[in-house]
Length: 126
Image 1 (cartoon, rainbow, N blue to C red):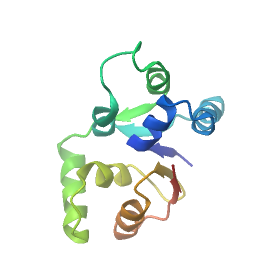
Image 2: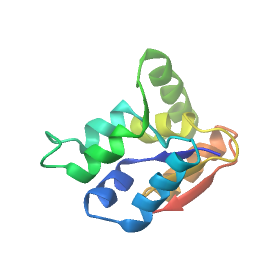
Image 3: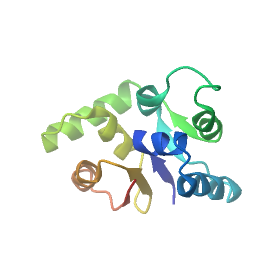
């Protein structure tokens, strides 16, 4: 199982959410890295390790995938089937595999996208 983080998870960490910090730490201890993509990082990063110390520490231990042409096209195609418009959420869902956990504030959108993609994931509201 992989834990996949959206922007709300990063904001929670930046505000000191101990539950999310503990989750990320337990994943590292288990030899796994939480996962996200560069589009999510772009939504939350505002300029540096001093200003965003908690977020910077979290990012150091993450697997950050590129939001490249291939993922962008797949996300666009998924949005075409759902009628949605949030490419960041669609791309995040497409990083998942069955059994993964997606931590998000957009549970409705993510559940719908995962269903349309044929994925069985655990969507956790932050």
